[in-house]
Image (cartoon, rainbow, N blue to C red; front, side, top):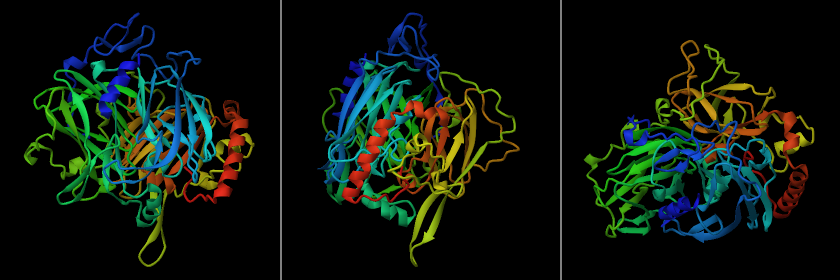
Length: 593
């Protein structure tokens, strides 16, 4: 069932701004009794048993684990020029992005990682994969494992695709992800909208890019206030770069459309510090999923996507122009900025169209990208994110009183007369945990003496609901990401939280694993159920901020974790890491995650 998706992916490789109700062509729902998935005639069906209405948090297909999807990754240090400017990168199997992981809903996925770097460790996290009762596979250095040592040492990750949709994997070791250690995950399953499967164009990964390594810029970010100038942005690992007034290097990303066909495109924001507006000239988008949650489709011309978020969209081939631009426009108020004169664009080319660039639009035909409405760091409106699988919350107090009131802020420590060192904090705690002694190892050792900087929040009661209020005390907005769970969004606003007037949304609230907290004094109220034992990181997904301490760990059902982890393998790898780090003189200079 996966072959046509892979073919579509190869075709890709060669805001809350007003949204309209979905058109009738996207409202078709088949009776799935005994019926299997067809992307146009029965998109909501799957295998005759499970379908779009299946509660994938508690049930779903279980494909034969003896025939897993197996991927072999090798990390190496190479020199390439994604935007025409050569630089040293860290690549998986010699490419950026790394190979896409394809699977079907219910598949077991095995990823064998070989670290051939000679000076650094690594750990691979599968973003959004809930790792249901597989905490040891979450791939977070200093939480679930010691780093994989370099010089050819290995680790195998095994997990089950309990949900379907689009995501990505990336290194969770320092800021290594933004030097090239990332790639897409595509898990096929039912869909809430029709499309033509031969026009599933696969993952479209949006990133920002520097001509120095992210690792070398981390010190600059620490001193400057958490932000650095980013030279460029990339679409699936490529873009042009203007080196002078009349000189451009690199090449534009291209995708192929067909007239009247319904194209599925899987957007992923992999940036270190950039939130984007997504816009197709001459086309509209039908948004059909947010992160790993299928939603009732809505129509929009412009789509806001925060770091770590994913949106699957359907774009009908209008054919009004045989060549047109796709634009990824950075939001000006949201962290990193590109160099003046650079832009992030790709080409939509219809089959049979002549080579060459599309015609340029008159500015009057495009949104005013300088308008504040396009630059605020806000998510797609909650009213547009209606999960297709409806889950209503019960027993939420009418007067919302969160157990965990979490304020995110920065703290400056003077370095000299002109500069300060910055760390990011949650409730005044800058996060730190050690690579060589991960949280899971502490639990296996029976060591409950956690360092206050590990910011451990214990949740021990079975099937309990955790309620958290997250707000920001200064003007920076943050994309928050929770490992191990989809969280329910009970409320989200750019205004100050008022407990006397706040009414939590309990009827089919949005669910996802990344959401924005507005920096203008706003908040987000979330809930999740404690049904997955583990040590689950909650952190800002701006790479600099995570490294600088903006994180905490929910320790869920601590007593069950020992039975879910291979203690021998964990201990053995930690021993090898300590030996490697000592031999190479590797010192930890960040939060550990």
